[in-house]
Length: 112
Image (cartoon, rainbow, N blue to C red; front, side, top):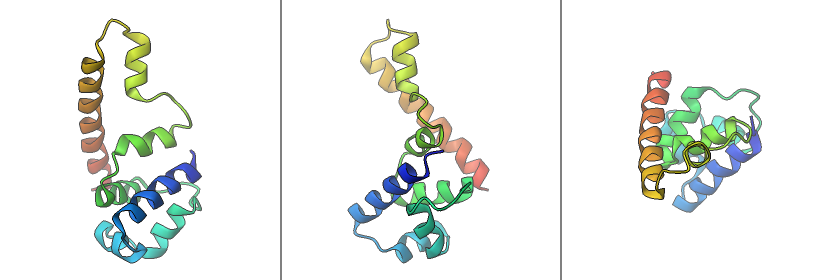
């Protein structure tokens, strides 16, 4: 798991919104120290609930965080391009969008 990459993604999005750690923590239902530790990559195994909550609060696509967790495995769209070269780019984008929705539903269930 690439903790530093996950943390940078969270921090960049938080700062882009102009939000404080406390504000994001409140939106995500977490402690501000949890958000800070995630941003710094200090969790050995961040909970799926924490990651999902922060992603939802910040509007970060869950697939972006999951791709960092998978330590460099190709993203879904790249897998489609590699294994199905006959697909048009618009078809790849549409399928990747559906995949992101499914991942979002799955992660929301995990967070419950």
